[in-house]
Image (spheres, rainbow, N blue to C red):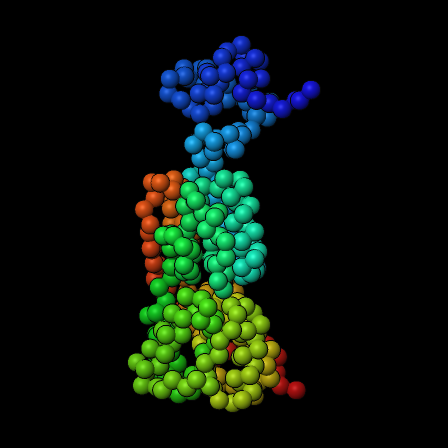
Length: 337
């Protein structure tokens, strides 16, 4: 015999109709306050859990929100997820997090699983590459793209970072310090953010009166190894006197090269990162960087996710980033040998 607690079993326990129990659990105004309290207290006592699938079949919505991120090792994504979780709690939403590692197949499986649980909304950072078979899992789902934009085969909302101006300011800051050979490490053109940030860097060069040199622009996957590998190559070739980064993990990878290099290899070299994790404020005397409004991004994402798909018009919101000038010339953490 099943011991599962149901609306009918609560009704039997309290000697009232199952309709009254259902209404009390849904905070229906037609239920007397003392009855509603008695039902809800008993439901908590016996461990009643609402059936999300049944709610979805009734058209009530599950209030499940999916969050698809490349990773949560990156402090930007970790802080975004933390603030989003708190905001979802404020909106009585249930948050499910999937990590895609920027892999389209992993992303597709995440969409499939969220479809299985009838997620109301999905917030995701689109993985690089072509979207395959995702549209079948988007019917009736409120989709919100974060940071990057990708054609999903239907209109979707976006929450973006407007970083064109601060990237340009970073280039002009370096030029003002005397740098004339400024390199760039960013994501490749599969990503909308990669294309936009490269364009911002080149516009910054033009504003500073500097020519763009393809040899100094290096692109790749938006990960730590891209930053590390390309920063080492640019510095070893001796073609650059400063580097600007166009991605969170790319910035951390490039920064590791600066901090671990021999003194002579990076002496006088300028560095501007992307994203502003807490340790950037003090590491190497402070890292100049492009900072985001992380909490505001997450709060807006929760607000959009709380709307039913049929009630939510397509939105495209942008939040201004800012250039934070600290110690642009970083001291290595170890000296030359």
